[in-house]
Image 1 (cartoon, rainbow, N blue to C red):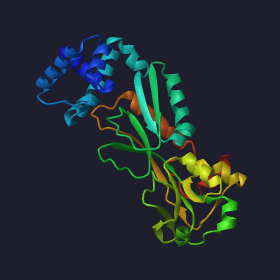
Image 2: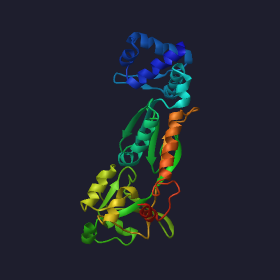
Image 3: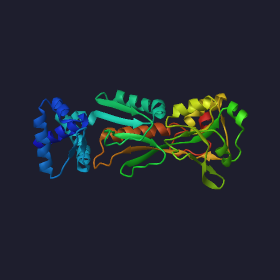
Image 4: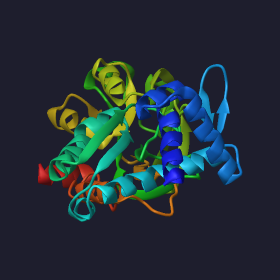
Length: 314
């Protein structure tokens, strides 16, 4: 029990960011918390925290202990309050990260349903358009698009996001319609810095996949901002089909270079490796994959012609 309580104090220190805040959280004093951390480090035979004048950060061993201890303590608390709570529902906090536009459109409904079905589950949704360190930000699951840069994480492919190359009729009327991929370097292109940091777009054609440079006039990592620039006749963009579906069918934008297809972006649910994956994480990923399967334009097996498939469902 003493070891469990020391681990509880340790997790509080990392989550609150300081010894004093952790002490207030557990109803103790800062010196007592410091002694408990020292005792835990001595018992485990390794340094768990590095202290600077600015903040406290975990060592590599501390990161590993935090991930294991967090799940262990959640299950221990659930057992202590009743075994029925474990078997009958999800509990604790589920912290999920995703890109803003995708999270608003598709992820929020999944989490709402999950929360309604499991009243003891607290949902903490983090929406932004940048990569996050899952350990440092205490993220249970991160939904990510495209290339996966962090090999330390466990990834499960839950969907695929087809992309379209689009521009407004007004822009194309004034700047001309590109016919070949090489034409893009002469156009004003709105680039997603999150997906294409080197001003290059990837397409598939009759002879396979090709990467082409584009003439960037505007760069941002926010999908909604890119859409606003395009609708303001600001240039050509490559973006997720689901974001421009209504715009295409309303005639606000046109697809260009249709003999070529922008390479779809795989959608992955990512989490930190763990010998025991909490039930709430497994259940959420299962629900997310089921939701993607029910949406033709986002299903993991999506292929060419998804605009037509989605139109038939519309």
